[in-house]
Image (tube, rainbow, N blue to C red; front, side):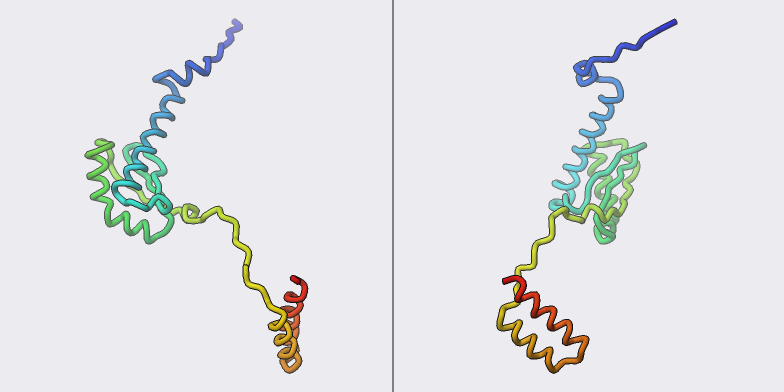
Length: 151
Protein backbone atom coordinates (compact mmCIF):
# COMPACT_ATOMS: atom_id res chain seq x y z
CA UNK A 1 0.00 0.00 0.00
CA UNK A 2 1.62 3.11 -1.22
CA UNK A 3 -0.27 5.99 0.30
CA UNK A 4 0.94 9.48 -0.31
CA UNK A 5 -0.06 12.37 1.82
CA UNK A 6 -0.87 15.43 -0.20
CA UNK A 7 0.19 18.62 1.55
CA UNK A 8 -2.38 21.18 2.55
CA UNK A 9 -2.40 24.43 0.68
CA UNK A 10 -0.98 27.49 2.40
CA UNK A 11 -4.29 29.29 1.98
CA UNK A 12 -6.07 26.47 3.78
CA UNK A 13 -3.51 26.50 6.61
CA UNK A 14 -3.76 30.26 7.07
CA UNK A 15 -7.56 30.43 7.01
CA UNK A 16 -8.26 27.24 8.95
CA UNK A 17 -9.88 27.72 12.36
CA UNK A 18 -8.41 24.47 13.69
CA UNK A 19 -4.96 22.96 13.59
CA UNK A 20 -1.58 23.82 15.03
CA UNK A 21 -1.04 27.05 13.13
CA UNK A 22 -4.43 28.41 14.19
CA UNK A 23 -3.70 27.51 17.83
CA UNK A 24 -0.31 29.23 17.68
CA UNK A 25 -1.91 32.31 16.14
CA UNK A 26 -4.65 32.41 18.78
CA UNK A 27 -2.14 32.06 21.62
CA UNK A 28 0.11 34.71 20.12
CA UNK A 29 -2.72 37.20 19.80
CA UNK A 30 -3.85 36.43 23.35
CA UNK A 31 -0.31 37.02 24.70
CA UNK A 32 -0.09 40.29 22.76
CA UNK A 33 -3.41 41.41 24.22
CA UNK A 34 -2.29 40.58 27.77
CA UNK A 35 1.07 42.28 27.22
CA UNK A 36 -0.66 45.39 25.88
CA UNK A 37 -2.99 45.39 28.88
CA UNK A 38 -0.03 44.99 31.26
CA UNK A 39 2.16 47.71 29.75
CA UNK A 40 -0.58 50.26 29.04
CA UNK A 41 -3.19 49.83 31.76
CA UNK A 42 -1.59 48.16 34.76
CA UNK A 43 1.97 49.55 34.59
CA UNK A 44 2.19 52.38 32.06
CA UNK A 45 5.71 52.90 30.73
CA UNK A 46 7.12 49.53 31.77
CA UNK A 47 7.32 48.05 28.27
CA UNK A 48 11.14 48.23 28.27
CA UNK A 49 11.40 46.39 31.60
CA UNK A 50 8.69 43.73 31.63
CA UNK A 51 6.76 41.59 29.15
CA UNK A 52 4.37 38.68 29.05
CA UNK A 53 6.38 35.59 28.16
CA UNK A 54 3.85 32.75 28.19
CA UNK A 55 0.49 31.48 29.35
CA UNK A 56 0.38 27.79 30.09
CA UNK A 57 -2.07 25.75 32.12
CA UNK A 58 -3.64 28.87 33.60
CA UNK A 59 -0.30 30.32 34.76
CA UNK A 60 0.75 33.66 33.28
CA UNK A 61 4.55 34.02 33.02
CA UNK A 62 5.87 37.59 33.10
CA UNK A 63 9.56 38.36 32.50
CA UNK A 64 11.12 41.40 34.16
CA UNK A 65 14.52 43.04 33.70
CA UNK A 66 15.59 43.18 37.34
CA UNK A 67 14.85 42.06 40.85
CA UNK A 68 13.45 45.50 41.64
CA UNK A 69 10.79 45.09 38.95
CA UNK A 70 10.09 41.55 40.18
CA UNK A 71 9.51 42.87 43.70
CA UNK A 72 7.25 45.61 42.38
CA UNK A 73 5.15 43.12 40.42
CA UNK A 74 5.05 40.71 43.37
CA UNK A 75 3.49 43.47 45.47
CA UNK A 76 0.88 44.14 42.78
CA UNK A 77 0.29 40.49 41.87
CA UNK A 78 -3.14 40.10 43.51
CA UNK A 79 -4.42 43.32 41.93
CA UNK A 80 -3.10 42.23 38.51
CA UNK A 81 -4.71 38.83 38.78
CA UNK A 82 -8.06 40.35 39.68
CA UNK A 83 -7.99 42.80 36.78
CA UNK A 84 -6.74 40.27 34.22
CA UNK A 85 -9.33 37.71 35.35
CA UNK A 86 -12.07 40.30 35.12
CA UNK A 87 -11.15 41.73 31.74
CA UNK A 88 -9.20 39.10 29.75
CA UNK A 89 -8.73 35.56 31.17
CA UNK A 90 -11.32 34.39 33.67
CA UNK A 91 -9.52 31.04 34.06
CA UNK A 92 -6.20 32.53 35.22
CA UNK A 93 -4.84 30.57 38.20
CA UNK A 94 -1.65 32.46 39.08
CA UNK A 95 1.09 34.75 37.87
CA UNK A 96 4.73 33.65 37.77
CA UNK A 97 7.39 36.37 37.63
CA UNK A 98 10.84 35.58 36.24
CA UNK A 99 13.89 37.84 36.13
CA UNK A 100 15.51 38.07 32.69
CA UNK A 101 18.32 40.68 32.66
CA UNK A 102 18.55 40.47 28.87
CA UNK A 103 15.39 42.61 28.67
CA UNK A 104 17.28 45.61 29.98
CA UNK A 105 20.18 45.36 27.55
CA UNK A 106 19.87 47.78 24.65
CA UNK A 107 21.37 46.82 21.31
CA UNK A 108 22.82 50.25 20.62
CA UNK A 109 26.44 50.54 19.53
CA UNK A 110 28.71 52.39 21.96
CA UNK A 111 29.28 56.04 21.17
CA UNK A 112 32.85 57.13 20.44
CA UNK A 113 34.53 59.21 23.11
CA UNK A 114 34.35 62.83 21.94
CA UNK A 115 37.13 64.01 24.27
CA UNK A 116 40.51 64.77 22.71
CA UNK A 117 43.87 65.69 24.16
CA UNK A 118 45.00 69.11 23.01
CA UNK A 119 48.54 69.93 21.93
CA UNK A 120 49.04 72.07 25.02
CA UNK A 121 47.91 69.22 27.29
CA UNK A 122 50.32 66.86 25.52
CA UNK A 123 53.18 69.26 26.23
CA UNK A 124 52.17 69.47 29.91
CA UNK A 125 52.07 65.66 30.12
CA UNK A 126 55.56 65.39 28.63
CA UNK A 127 56.90 67.98 31.08
CA UNK A 128 55.27 66.17 33.97
CA UNK A 129 56.68 62.83 32.78
CA UNK A 130 60.23 64.18 33.07
CA UNK A 131 59.85 64.44 36.85
CA UNK A 132 57.56 61.44 37.48
CA UNK A 133 58.54 57.88 38.48
CA UNK A 134 59.28 55.53 35.55
CA UNK A 135 55.93 53.69 35.46
CA UNK A 136 53.90 56.89 35.66
CA UNK A 137 56.20 58.63 33.16
CA UNK A 138 55.61 55.86 30.60
CA UNK A 139 51.85 56.22 30.97
CA UNK A 140 51.98 60.00 30.67
CA UNK A 141 54.14 59.75 27.54
CA UNK A 142 51.68 57.29 25.95
CA UNK A 143 48.87 59.79 26.57
CA UNK A 144 50.88 62.61 25.03
CA UNK A 145 51.66 60.39 22.04
CA UNK A 146 47.92 59.82 21.50
CA UNK A 147 47.40 63.57 21.16
CA UNK A 148 50.06 63.81 18.49
CA UNK A 149 48.80 60.76 16.56
CA UNK A 150 45.21 62.05 16.27
CA UNK A 151 46.28 65.24 14.49
